[in-house]
Image (cartoon, rainbow, N blue to C red; front, side):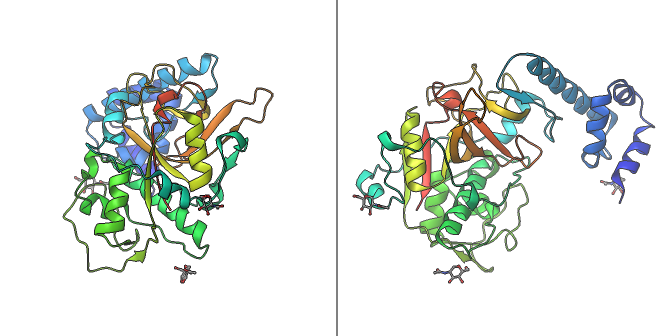
Length: 342
Ligand SMILES: *[C@@H]1O[C@H](CO)[C@@H](O)[C@H](O)[C@H]1NC(C)=O
Ligand SMILES: *[C@@H]1O[C@H](CO)[C@@H](O)[C@H](O)[C@H]1NC(C)=O
Ligand SMILES: *[C@@H]1O[C@H](CO)[C@@H](O)[C@H](O)[C@H]1NC(C)=O
């Protein structure tokens, strides 16, 4: 079906929102590209949606005029107000209790034995990542980051292992976490390894519906997850320690703070993300992503960054990825917690 045509023709019957649309070429381009979403919305909702796009455009244009290391742009979340966005999409919740520290065991399971003094200048596990996922309007980043990390871990162990795991299974059945209301990645890994007996269904066998439903643990095929151990690390802002654990153990699920006051992270398009207004004390955490590597920009400035995979589709950031500023005071709490399955 040609949504664009239907969208435009239905749209022309409408008054106030039509005027906004006609007055703003950037808004109208965005509305056409994202048209399906707005088909059949009432006039008042449509006007509100357009207002949010215009508010985001204002944030974007103001930021892009300033000198900074990153630029902003519209994406498929531009219809959401900055507070509303963080409320729906950033719901990582810290647990009452962390996994016990097991430093000796962690050392025995290392893939590499780099030390703080001989860390490589740049490093990446990107070749083991194939997909950019889209969590949609559900606070499930913890489940998405865990499935992406496990897929990469398995591909690294066995290149013929090629499944896409089901985040919905975690939403429904990991009772320590809270479905679309958020959770903690290490809890989901423990659920998968122990309660689910190191097996999980694929996305195909247990599809994603963006809301929690009744848990079903049987009645569909599952694949082996091959998790030996789950290690949780507290970096407490020590970025060198985080890099050390990344190179020695593999891609880490990390957590961070997304500031809902500025809308910068929501509208990130490309470059090295740095936000001076966000937290750096490890107390405020609301989002989880996968840390894949680090490096320095290949211009004269050689700015250090982390390469991180998000679960907000490819329209966000650098095709779904972000480069976050490194060594700038634990910016946005990027180096607080990390969890890995070996
Ligand atoms: C739009 O609304 C009409 C009438 O309520 C309904 O029949 C139609 O399926 C809706 N279309 C979409 C794409 O939701
Ligand atoms: C790293 O060091 C530990 C402890 O000495 C050892 O058990 C492990 O085999 C080493 N791993 C590698 C990849 O060399
Ligand atoms: C690698 O994965 C494939 C696909 O799941 C499986 O058939 C094969 O047995 C695995 N190989 C090893 C050595 O585990």
